Image (cartoon, rainbow, N blue to C red; front, side):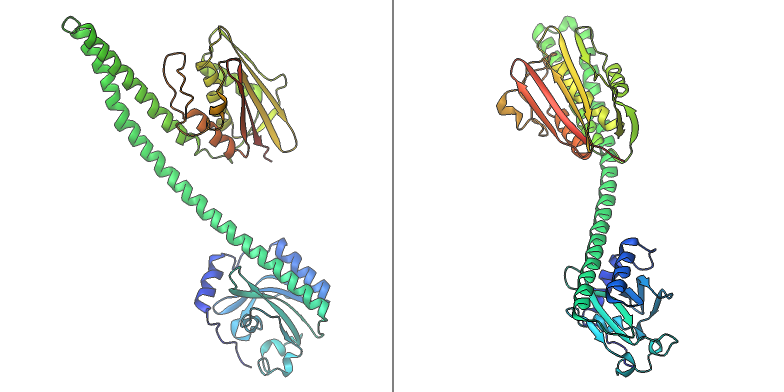
Length: 400
């Protein structure tokens, strides 16, 4: 018996194998289906998906064998990975110098015929093999089928690699968002507190020293207070923006759309000169309710702030199909210029209009809306006619 030598790239090979985090994992139908097919097509009682570890070969899937692993010293697959580009075929292991006196050829049901197709990564690093074992040989069609099944195993391993990378990225983003929230809390305190002091101080100075300050001075104090309030509101919106896009979208709830909208309307203290028409049917929604609530708060809030009509009318529609929920929010406001529509969802992008209180928007709300819609698996568009209406249409993906 001759044990297989180590591949030239053994260190790299083991690093890649371990990065898959697949060794000693539980049975998986995706792999088991392939070994079942390999046995059926090749007409062999035994088929294995074998991964060659440092000192052993471990079977991710096995058909016709009870053992979960064997020593690498006696492994046939350890020989197969030495030539990653071709199938290893052993007609009779009992007469092959590499396997004479191998314990696997001397057991009650010995390994006689062996055929193994190496399993490689997308960069050609061999990790193990898909093999079949039987007293008989394979014809050319069976060998080709075995190669194609091996390619399917490689795709499964590649998919596992990509999923592992996504998991690492997700954990990194989660950690980043946690640090961002901590930073936001510090910024909120360290910036908003001085601004609050400026607002309070300007009021005190104006009241206490009213007789000593001329009208121009009082105008400056009012401007100082107004600027401080605007900056405080700006900071609040920035923090809300990053808080919104860090929602756990997988945290879903079942609720009626009109139930959610009634809560939104109550929060916003709608005035008598505004009429909000909710959907005729209270369709059931399954998604992150907090995220959807924030979308409606921003869209309805914009309709209220930028209305130029004596009576504001906001119509909300909701529908559902096999894959998406669709929502429409339409108002009878001043509308949006055509040349502004393409950029309106950009962060810090504004139309330049003043709202009903004489303030200029910060260009944060609609960017937040788009980020939330995308995170919910949907898209958002806007239709508008200047001086007549604006209609925002967005979808969110249905979740199981």
